[in-house]
Image 1 (cartoon, each protein chain N blue to C red):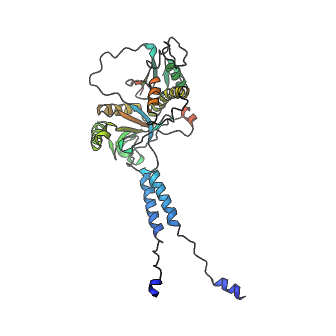
Image 2 (image 1 turned 135 degrees about the vertical axis):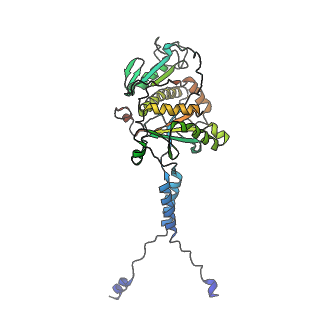
Image 3 (image 1 turned 60 degrees about the horizontal axis):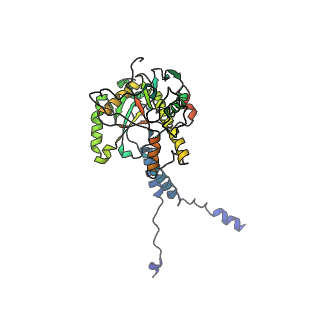
Length: 194
Length: 164
């Protein structure tokens, strides 16, 4: 009788903390915190034979960005700072020279692009350009498009483009992207200054 | 007097540590969720460029990494100081990129192979010549989705300063 009344002895959990610490330290050592983020781009497919006669594009529809080996910018034959690039690119894309774009707010300058659909941003760098500068330029050009899309989304849908969900707002996103299609073309780099 | 004597005899009660495992387990779970396994041993220095228009790479299993940068101090006497390409755990030449991409693609399932993203993790001081060569190899290997790995700057103004 006395035996039955006795409680089952407790399992000694004193070393539980040690085991947990061991696991914790293992995870601390073998894992990293950094998440992968970056600018997504798509490369053109590689063709052995070059495409004969690429479709002609009017000079006014091309926004040329040149970066030399000293990381200096030449945009539309004009020396520019990186901080000015975004506004300049937005002005070009949003110009709406032929008046066919209803949501554009550009100045309709006759020497700038016809409409966002026709506007092409052409980027050319030197082989001596630093990668950091290249990413910065890419970033500004993408940002120019993103800012225009953001403005369009705010005006048309009253919502922020950047906070939209890829699955839920598929149709809306499609429309926004169609309003300002991202056309960034990269030319083969020059090899002038090493 | 007797009362005081009794108190002196009693030993200090031990601190209750029964909640310690709980706390440690909590920490453990936090780290298990918030971190990812380290993929490779970096042999090149990679100081990522900064950008604001960055997107997160959602599925790790779809991403393949290419590193480029100057070899680390301890490898410099062997490999020199000029920027090199690193694939997996070893230094590689440009010609190794194509077989590497094909091999990586074969390891993935068919649907995943089409969505494979190449993440270029390059130092910001690397010259574009090397990056262009890598890009050409990727194009030849039909790996067209790429991602220029970059960091979000803490201070956006710093992006436009001339130093970096």
